[in-house]
Length: 114
Image (cartoon, rainbow, N blue to C red):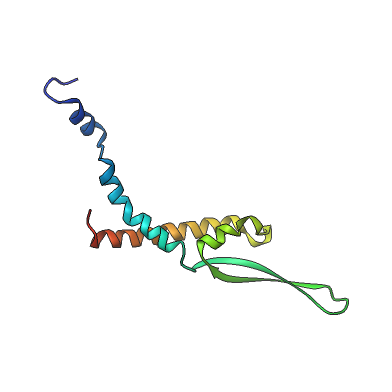
């Protein structure tokens, strides 16, 4: 260890350690933005509608797209059938949420400097 440099300054210089409060203040706009973005009904979801037909025609299965919130999508994720392509839709919706939260978080950070 160098003689003239205290241990704390040496560690901070080597690992570029920021105090927790500074890291939290930098992360806070992103967390707020992700909380807001996850409740917006902008995420694509494919749903199956099964209708019974009178007579001997059987039933009709129809797939429709509609928008839902990320919270609602994740809540219904276990009930989605394989025909609804749940995995790729979850990945696309999470990437959309992260992208929107990052953009909104950077915009919030521009106006609210820590």
